[in-house]
Image 1 (cartoon, one colour):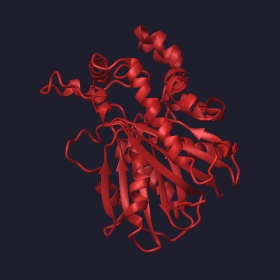
Image 2 (image 1 turned 180 degrees about the vertical axis):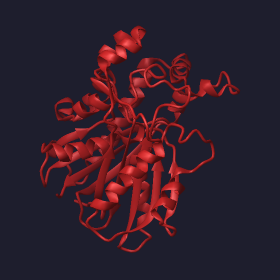
Image 3 (image 1 turned 135 degrees about the vertical axis):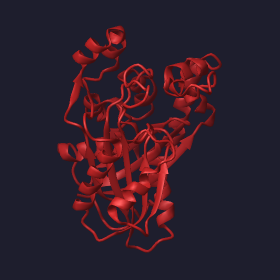
Image 4 (image 1 turned 90 degrees about the vertical axis):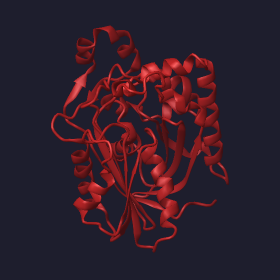
Length: 333
């Protein structure tokens, strides 16, 4: 069975201690009570002081402190979905590069929906193939859902958004987890789920995801959306479990921090014993963290004691575009 040559060397997260409980969310959004109770979130993380880039730098420093090898950073990737410091052209990856004094690393800021960080792992592996053995890639994701007209509760369906940041380093040395395989599939027809075409002059309308989804569903039915999602996930699963790899070996599955309804309708049924193997209880305490869901949940899973060395874990990413990434890893430490 072929495996990639890469491992996750170091991993960390920054999740604000401040939380909005379900009771507080319902009090603040009484018209959303029915949806909020159905979604399954118990609390949402809300950052009160740090900016997105400050959260990112916080977790990056933690990850660099705990890395066990002397890798040289050849690539710095910063994934996000929301405005960073309320600026349009600013590139946060270059900010991280400056703060780390990694002047020879290649910086890249990526906005490919909430799958940006997971896709960046796959892209990094391709880039590192051309670098020396001691080269590594730092991938950081950070989002704070304030400062624009985007509302963490009412701007989208089936999701409530929480603040947080996460980061990992991959390289060819042995680390926390061996990356067995990583695959991505996409369905570009679904790009219009997040495209507001009705008003190109109003910046506030750009954040109204409910509106763009309504427009999309006026052309395509909910059944068509569900069908496309399930087909993509089935394709992804079939690509991952080739060459003797078995779904039965998977101990835990990390899904995006979506609502219980979305997970039960679109994600759990695709994977063997998907609901029981899910580690979604963590996402229920933070909300959807943009591109950070998978890294943050994986870090929490490792800290929980629910997995040990040798266990196989599957991470599933999903993001606007639409794209889905699956990464199969084996715990090493």
